[in-house]
Image (spheres, rainbow, N blue to C red):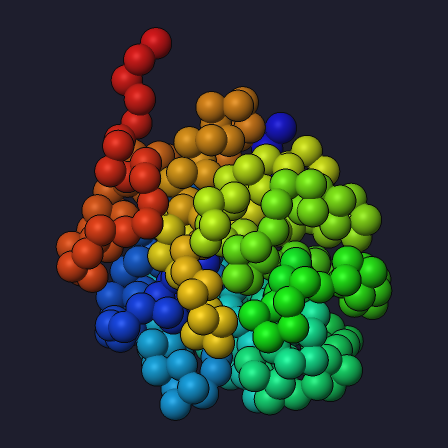
Length: 285
């Protein structure tokens, strides 16, 4: 069995950091991840710099990437203006994110859920690139609490021509909830946070339910600037260790990921949330 890991560290990982890394440094992170064997990297976010200053200079990041064959470079857009910037920058895939709740949609994108759905549908209709629709707060919302799985399933069904990813944006989901929603929606992808230490168990549950695409972030960087205390994507190297140990092929070099997380630790000046990069690979037989 083989899965695809999308490292979202250069976007979702860094957007919640207090430091703003220069575009050239963010591009170097993208390059390191690609060299490690990551087949999809979320390289940049095309949002307003005043809203998310850590993502300023997206076009400069993309221009500095050393493209590798077999690697798909994606970017985040929340509206048509962001989509136009992404296309002009020359990325390979559009990640359009919309929320499952009205309150979070208004807070995050300044539009209603229906407005976001309409914008996504318009982009899918006109896009020459493949489109991923990520449904954020699919399991719980910081403003509205638990989210009705039926609402998420109805949203997912409206995007049959796109790749759908279910996002546990604030890290509240548990394995049964993840398994049930992946099976119900047939979504191929999940975006999991380890805020409450359930992220890796949720990844296994998603795999068992049929998911083949997993978002993760090198070193466990990440969070959401619009969701208080929503820290910690699942760490890419921890996920790779888990999957490869269970016989699931990722095509990723664990040693190269560990080197990248160690490099990030030095840049940010603090210990990261991931554990494998500190513990190292297991040398036992």
